[in-house]
Length: 133
Image 1 (cartoon, helix red, strand yellow):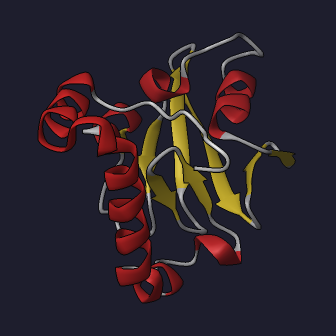
Image 2 (image 1 turned 180 degrees about the vertical axis):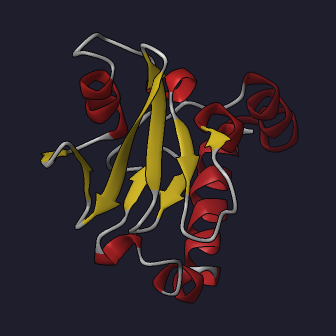
């Protein structure tokens, strides 16, 4: 391998891979990822419109029109995603974390815990942390 990047991998999964492929496990990882990317190239091109103004938050795709909300001093604060930015009180924010902090009085907050998400296709809001399951 010419260039190597280290990425997080579940320890149990890595141990199973090493057990099966021994010292060739890095090549097995490269082969599997390469194969996956080849097989899913068209799927990626047709995923919901995050490219046209949506946002990818870790593994969660948020299409345009997605609403984020948090409760602050007994009132719901709501931001809307458009043009790849989260709009709250007529101001644009680059990430869920930044808009969450703004909606909570500019206090550092864990957006995964404090936010709820409602995508255009959703009927109701759902805790952001549930999207990580």
